Image (cartoon, rainbow over all chains, first blue to last red; front, side, top):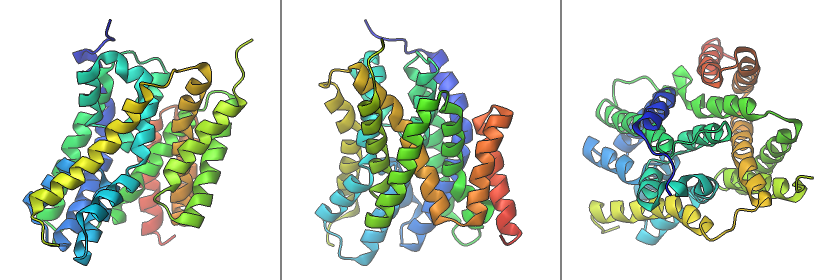
Length: 231
Length: 99
């Protein structure tokens, strides 16, 4: 028995993904600009965006390659550390997504990013049953990411910096909005406070890379600790 | 660094792919008790709060005001997407004004 996986759900996801894709497009332009300055052409920049599909990991990788002393192991480890939060994202999606069957589940994971994970987790909580929703949200985002990369790498000399238009704050704005919309009962404030506090503390002690995964783990741990079986 | 670009790309793609599927795959062997479910439900809230807090800390007054206005606008408009897009307008406006 596999769960619902329909074109309808895919379309619903794609529609919700479009506003996210706008911000990812701008972020893609940002990565394209950096890649072009590191000597990547349009083809190489777009290939990197397609293969890794994670802005923060790609920026770190390009920085490392620019030093000229990067080993394959250093590259591998850098991406593993920066993308470690995806371990958490995948684990949180698993009980819902696995019901679609392995092929559809793993296929959908290829399109998993920060923004559509947040969006999908929110919809699951509201009762989304169609497992094609995740791939739907991922599709416009992927297109925006690749198009943005190509534009940034190709037109490096004539573009305004995305920061001037506020696009660098887009993911944080979506996070703040979705977080507010997801807080339904008083108990939901606990992971919010724990997550924010942990992120700030870990960023202060160890830098921003491990801060997000630490926030997620701490929020999950506290929620599990205070959970009481329904009476 | 002597490797060719396709080799570099393959190594980077493998690391990124591993992160995408490993947590998902491991979770298949964890029985989902109500306690685990509570943890998984709390995870996105904690992550979003973390992202927001780091953005406020890394930014300044403009970023803090913009994110605070996103929270207020989400409650007011009952649409998180509209509030997020307006938040970007707010931060662009504040930066333009020199805040």
